[in-house]
Image (cartoon, rainbow, N blue to C red; front, side, top):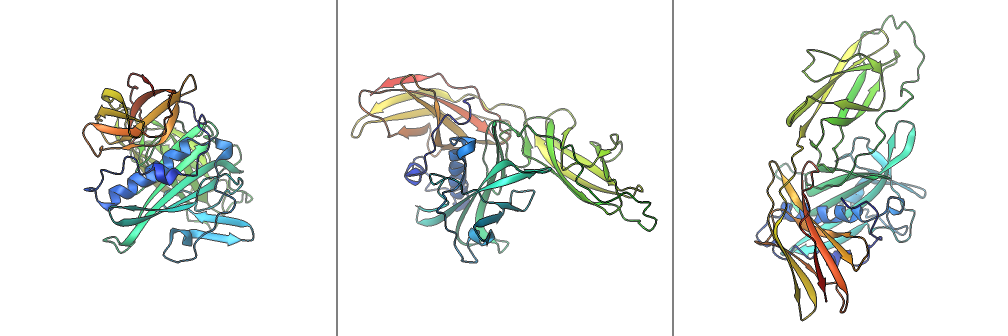
Length: 396
C-alpha cells in the first residue's frame, strides 16, 4: 500500500480527468454513474496530505432549498454541514483554511444527464477533542426524485486521520487505508453530580454506531475488532455500558460511558451485531444495537496486465482482466511513477464492473522522453486490497 500523502493536491482540472473511465458507461443507470462520480471524488481525497485537506477559502454555497447545500448553515465566517447521511455526529464545521483547497461544486454531463457534484470537508470530534479527524463527504445529485419521493442523490462519507482514511458511505461505495487510531476517551461524557435518584425509573437514552472499517463502505469491515461511536445521556449518573455479541445472552463487565470504544465482534466472516446496554446510576437500563459485515478476504489480483504506448496524441493505455471477490468488488486503483519518483495513486481510478472487457485506463498526461511505471490493484467493499500486478515500465 502506498502511503497517504505522496501526491500533491490537484484540484484544477479534475473534472476533465474524471471523464476517463466514464466514456463507456452509456448503458449504466444514473445511480451507478453517480456512485462512480462520487467514488472518483473521494479517491481524490486519498491524494491529499492530511494537513492540506480542506475546501477552497473562496467557496460559496447555493441557497436553493433543493440543493445539497441546503444542509450548510452559515454563522458569521463559520459554515457547518449536517452530514447526517453517512455521519454519526450531525452538524460539523466546514474546513476552508487553504486557498488551494479542493473544489466544492462542479457539474458533469454524462449520457445527457446533468450531475451536480458537491464536496464538504469537515471536522470530526472525538471525546473532548473537537478537531480529532477530518471528514470528506461527497454528494452527487441529478434531476427528479427517487421512488420514495426523496431527491435523487448518492452520498459518500470519508473519515480521515493523520495516518490514513476510513471510508464510509450512504447510497454508494468508496474506500482507503487505515482507521483512526483513537479508540477510547479518558473522560466520561456525563458530567452531572451523582445522586440517589429516588424517583428515576427510566434508563439512559443512547445509541451505538459501528464505524466503517479499514477502507470499508458503511456496513462493512475487514477486521472483527471495530471502533464504536456511542451516545448516552441520563440525569442519574454515573452512566456505564456493557456489550454483548449474542443478543444479550451474556454481557461484558460494565465500563464507564465513553463516546468512543473498541470492541471485538464474534470471530469469523459474515454479518455481525453488537448490542450495548446503558445503565444509569441506580441500574435502570436501555439497549441499542448496530450491525456490520465482516469480510477479510482480498480480491484476486487483476490479470493479464499490459501497458501500450499509443500515438496521435501520445498516451499510455493500460488493460487488465477483471478481478473477482467473495463479496462486493468496488474498483481498481492505478499507481504511476515518473522516473525514479515514488508511485502515486491516480485519483480517477476505475470502478467495478469495468465498462469494457478487458478493463481499460488511459494515461494522457505523459511527455516525450520520459519514463513511466505502472501497476494496478483491486479493492472491495470491506477495504481489502488485492496483491498488485507486476510493474510495467514504458519510455515515451
